[in-house]
Image 1 (cartoon, rainbow, N blue to C red):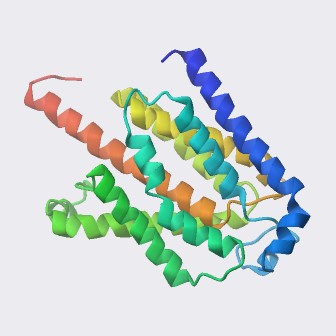
Image 2 (cartoon, one colour):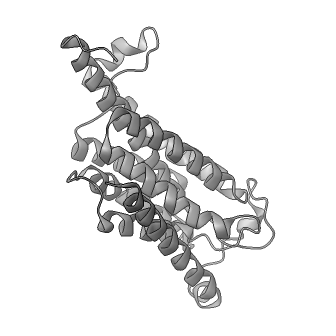
Length: 255
């Protein structure tokens, strides 16, 4: 995949995300008549004035899907499976964003369901942390899998907490995406590189309307979905790069 190809796909994802976000903002009055009042400006983490739309996640996932359809996965289905596994968390979050009052414990349960789905679809979980004692625990799948589910669900909700400040969540996710993209490219993991690049492009398109005026926010659907994609990109990078390094050492190959 050449650099112009990567740049074109990045631009497609960014523009589709921005276009859908603009359409959402343009339909504000029509949407608000069909949504329940949430009074988000009174939330403790909010720094914006007024009740901004919380449907930025719809635009972000439109961009992600467009990126997947545009190709560049080098034949790997991993990016598709990661996005598919966001389903429970995104659905519960979207209902909350529309004002249907999904309790926090149910949204947390949905994040756990998405994490469990990722484990089943990807056959991957956290197996090392490079911390004394913890790596022995993670060596046993019956203990490692629940800890992986907890890590994934916690990261989703941590992402949600920073969505109330204009530009904060987008900046964090763009920075993390660039970091993962660089690490995955160095490790030779084309599908993880692709997923990180697509996520970063979608977040860049969202950023245009999220900062500085907070015209639209990710909402629970966007923040939990993006958080899920981000943490699983990192888990897959660590697991697969670690396996590759172990294989190289076993063959006596140095870096």
